[in-house]
Amino acid sequence: MKKPSKFLLSGLLNTTLSYLAFLAIFNLTESVATALMSGLGVGIITSYILNRFWVWKVNEIGSIWRFVIFQLFLVTINWLVLHWLSLFEFSREVAQIFIYGIFAPFAYKVNEVYIFSKRAKT
Image (spheres, rainbow, N blue to C red):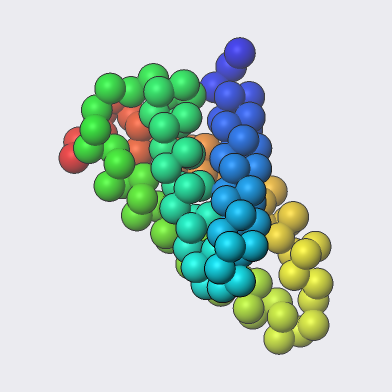
């Protein structure tokens, strides 16, 4: 299996696990904030493990900080774009699909060149 396919498959698995964690925590606590943060945490951990060991096969632990910072950057930009679009009453559900479509190739390239590159330094 080629890296782009592995990257997309790991993203699908990561998203599924994040969502399941969100649902489980929300059902236990009824707190959206707690559920969102828990889902995000599960997502970042799952995504890092899958990307580091399966997609990119990198043995360097320093990539974790670059990865976490990049993930937080993506979440922030995602939230800002959705918030901005909501001001124009644009469907957030539809917008999110487009955002994923834009973020996926961008994230792939950043992961390849900067985060999990054998040339990247901590």
